[in-house]
Length: 280
Image (cartoon, rainbow, N blue to C red; front, side, top):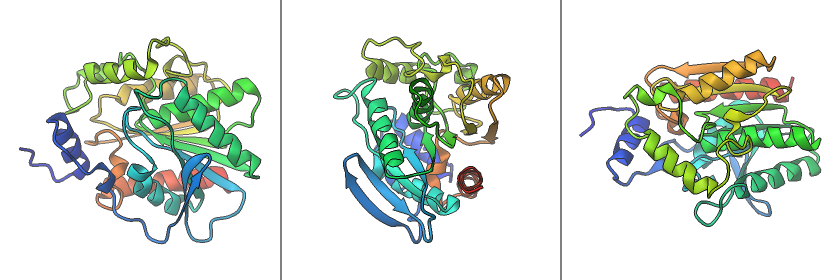
């Protein structure tokens, strides 16, 4: 039995034991957020009070491509919307095994274009875990196709290396994410596609010309090196990049927003940074 009082760590320890958890309930209910469901593209608007017109955050949930939804991440992204002051659209996408690469990226791309077509002048993109990988792939696709680049990228516990080669997998501090777990999730998502395709695994992408990027990661999570290596490559390519590694934290610890000081701190930092890129 765990003795931790950190709800996010308790969640991952229980998940490693194959015990049920209330992932969606890790965060508290954010105050003052107006919600509106959209059918096409499927997703959920989260609007904080006095959100300015014309600026939007497109939020992409994590879950290893096998779980997660706007519902599971509604609270965390609601806290982020409050912290940034920007209306936030949490996009839905299909899950493995019924939907595989590049279906998820296609859904995200449709939502991004929809926001631009509705008159958004600046769109930031935020995502956690595989959602962060999709956010980065979306920026890569926009760059390649001549579509307006996102204003910025907020990447939480980014999963970019589908082969799980990072040395941080060997630290022994992460109770759930082993190489075997991550490679199994990757295999389901790829369904035979090339694990070096940059749109599937942005660890292999040319990052020149990408927008300002802020990476947050838990210092105890196995995917730590995904963020470290991405930040290093972005710096070398001249991208405006910031990396914050939070001591003692595990994957997507921001899901405990409203319940832990460290999650609140990270959400506050992320919100302030998004606001600076959207409303400057």
